[in-house]
Amino acid sequence: MPNFRFEIVGFGKTTTLEEELPSVDLASPRAVEMAHAALLAADSTEADHSGSIIKVYDEAGYLVATVRISDVVRDNSEVRSGSSNPPTEEPGVMRSG
Image (cartoon, rainbow, N blue to C red; front, side, top):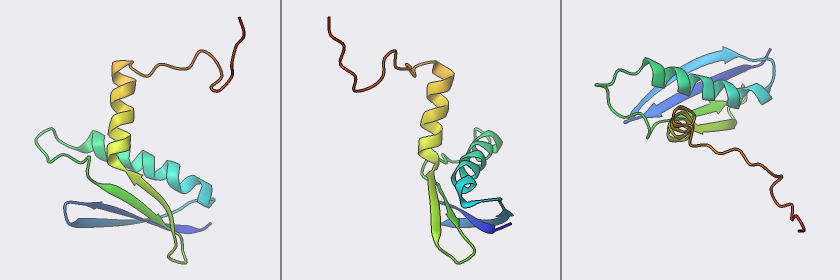
């Protein structure tokens, strides 16, 4: 299995983790999971993590994914508040009537 390097960058500090994943397609979802875990683990007295990012590199050192924690925070607040309104029709489809 390929090995991926996850760099969590925030407030001038970088934390690096390595993990094996079956394919590159799972790198971005895994970074989102890491972002959720970091938010859940964060104490309310800790600094705001919304400015942090997670970068994912493959074995050759190529950047394959970037996840902004602010995007994950926004997704979490929409889920909690129920403000995400799912579309009732297909987007871009005009209905006659």
